[in-house]
Image (tube, rainbow, N blue to C red; front, side, top):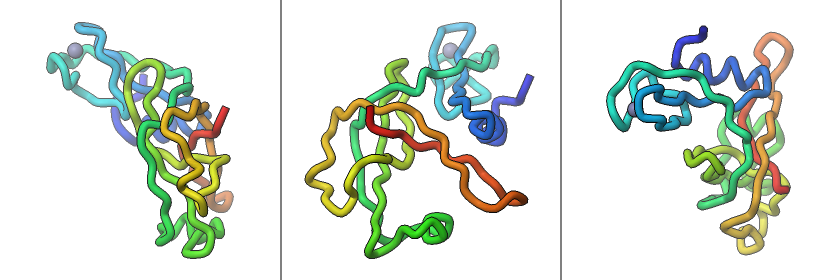
Length: 136
Ligand SMILES: [Zn+2]
């Protein structure tokens, strides 16, 4: 079994799986995964796959892009949207939000239903999978 680390979380993303940890003692679900339960401090955890469905609870549009996003063509004239998605299982996570018009943030609505998406960026050697969400 994989360690409960962010490296494992990204390894699962490469397999197009959104994985958190569930506490076997109190049932709390953690995303990103945690090696110790934040609710009861138990170390008795197990991997749990999330449905990837949720809703947008907060967002911002980014005009000053990170290097990896500049390479994708984002930037001052082509902003992208980053949001906090509350998953139907409970936990919330930040990720890029697809299918929205980041040039018109007033058109982006809190509560928008979303589904997980996996974006491959980089070349063969340095390929990395990024978490994102698309509009349903
Ligand atoms: Zn617990």
